[in-house]
Image 1 (cartoon, rainbow, N blue to C red):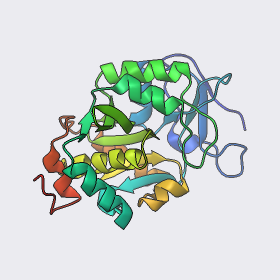
Image 2 (cartoon, helix red, strand yellow):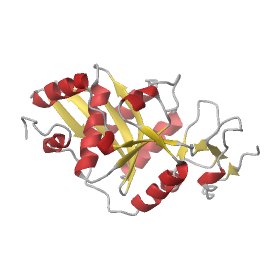
Image 3 (spheres, rainbow, N blue to C red):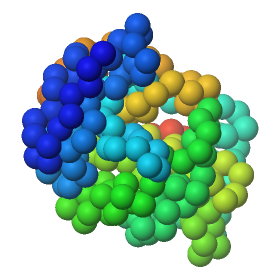
Image 4 (cartoon, helix red, strand yellow):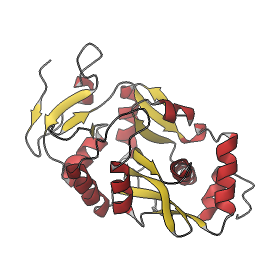
Length: 248
């Protein structure tokens, strides 16, 4: 059960070497290393992500199975459909991308992931992902109501590989609206999968499901070399979810 310790810049072990279900922390791959842009880029490109709490070293994970959302399987339940229709139809509401990344990640750091306790978005992670955002590899999807940020999410994107990270909400269902917006954006740009990392009831209720790590890693290896989409949101993208959108 020896866990590899990485020096900054050192190559990651193969994702298949992560601890399995017989070990204390299934999916744990390595510890140490650094959270710089290059390390994060190499990690995500290999199907690996950092996740650790205050007082712990940097821990790197590659879970098996992997929770993902196929964008054509997103569940737009009746209540969410009604909420989304009202959001789209209101002149006070707007879906934006990358206009408030720092505010989004900080709000996420104060929120608990559905199905999890505590926060893993510790100050070093905030700093690291802000640098990743400036480098063009992390993005925020934001639901604005009446000129105020009501909820949102941030994600990592390398080429056509998209990795969901965390969501928050200040108004009921605002984070779900942000996820719906990300799904619509991905559908418009022919991106078929959003990584969700770990299984939660909340994500499953929205259509996410588990796939084998080997399949996920193969998908990422192919998609990271594709030209990235232009990260902006046009209201016409809502037609990917609601074809009768009156704002189209």
